[in-house]
Image (cartoon, rainbow, N blue to C red):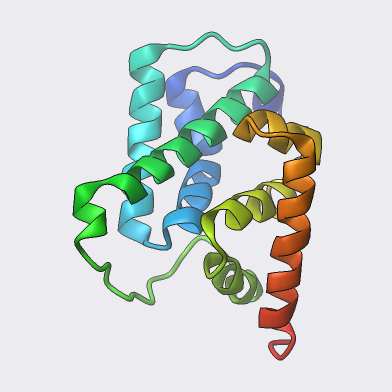
Length: 160
């Protein structure tokens, strides 16, 4: 295991170590590279400004993911976002071609299913950890995972 993964990182180290994680998380939610980059930048600026205290490296990682998801929700609530349509871009994204096929299907899911699918299958969190990160009940996470999987199965049935 990487030595940086076991210690609490400074904001500057966190940008290097968790930058891709935050960007991928934001991109999976907002479906736009530029918006995802803006959100990632805001998350790390927030970390720098607030200087939160973390119990461990896993707590720091969870905090970054939670901040990213909250910022994505704020992005969707913004007046600007609700009155504009993003460009349908085919930019290179931080995923492989196989991951892009699955991520395209995940991106079509409603936000609540997209969040739990991403955290469970891509980030590897348990349902208990997801419930804690999203501040919802574990049974809700399990229900959303099951419904999200059903939706993905229908979407991906012909893709593979």
